[in-house]
Image (cartoon, rainbow, N blue to C red):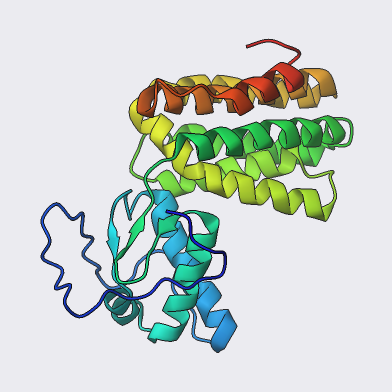
Length: 270
């Protein structure tokens, strides 16, 4: 449902007792992971938003989960005011759906969103690795190699957060030469695409090995200071993730943005 930007999701009316059938409910335990830090006003709302965002992207709050402001506020140890602001930010990011008088819910995977995110990421990240390819020093390449080693060690086990942290570091170094505005855009797209990467890993366990091969190819292109090959590798790497997830969740959807970006950035190879 379309909702005006900035409109704050409201809590369900008291008549909603939480017993409707078919709900995916998440029972909160005392918080693990990234804690919400004490602070005032805006800072606290951003901390709450960051924690809930992490839970959604990691799958701890799966698509369709009902989100109850009062219950979450109690379990995170905050008042309803920062929780409402956090919900508003999640709504603006497209991570939750919320309507007046109804529960907020974690959004289901939207193929159009996935296609748009990866189309944009292919274009911007190929630009960034092309700019960065000739500027990496031996220390940068060594750090990328270490991040890749950690990715191999944590692939497919019960430490997905460690794999994603190493993955973010690897891609961050590969694109580090661009300016701060483009870096922020890349970081935002990378964070948003994490839920799709996790879906790809769950849907096709063999994707771990393929991803590592592609990361090794990107590292080799950067060692050779070859911007064209680095751009080609990263374009195909990102497109493969998007196309695999789309084939699994929405095989009827035509990923025009992803394929067009791949055609431009990947030298026309699909």
